[in-house]
Image (cartoon, rainbow, N blue to C red; front, top):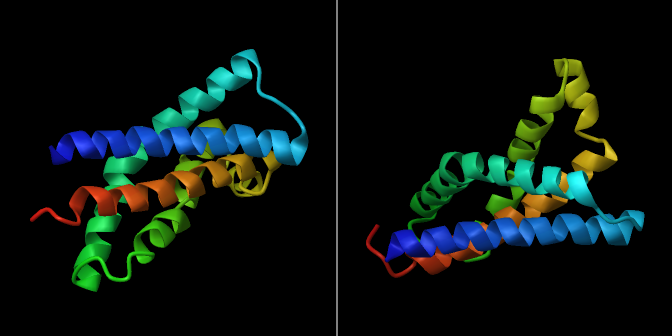
Length: 139
């Protein structure tokens, strides 16, 4: 049951991030993603999330729960998960960067900012979902 809950949390978190990306694009830049741009955003955010959930977010949440000896304060989980937004964004930018210098410059580009917002939302929702999944379990 926990595994299914965790899958639901991951999918909902990714969808929250994608919605944040497209909403931010519309609100901040007054643009919409069409065709191949929309496909690229969906694909690369999904790929980055596939790596981020098991390798970053889940271990980080278990570590935080261990450090706090439980789930208090609850707000720590979405806050901490939101703060690691730079890692999945860096993964996406690394794939497209031609050099390390280019990677660092691209971290502050408008496109990167949209992915920052995306993974802040992903982390926030994953932190809340982690509490929902594991608060009452013995895991």
